[in-house]
Length: 157
Image 1 (tube, rainbow, N blue to C red):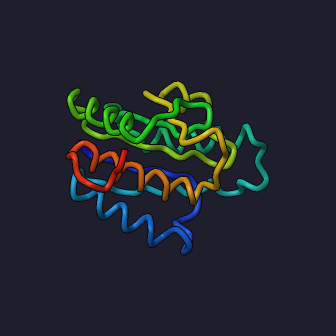
Image 2: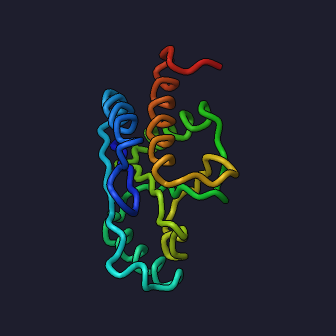
Image 3: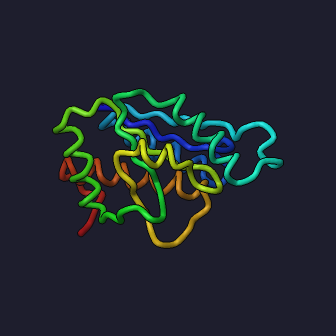
């Protein structure tokens, strides 16, 4: 199984880049992992929210493979504890999922088509965070889940 962490927008900002790289490298000890940064569509500033979400949705749908298991990061999704996330990942592995894509949408969220395509919607919190911080938090939580699955010492109950 492989993890793809996908985000719409700019590349990692310097204030989170090092942390993302550290946790991504650590995840790589458990599962192959890669970041995919989909660029914001051209002329995004002149588009309506609906148009922008549609264009971003086309980018996402063009990137996804049919067999990908899509986890959409969404504030209205299901909140999981770290052990529950570990269990979720282990279940996908048991189901022989080839690739789990963790998608962080654009500034206004994602299109209805992407929501419909999502196999699961995950919320980190009821709070809203900057997308750059979400990238770091997702990377850290995936690493934490990996250590829980392997019963390693990083996570403390």
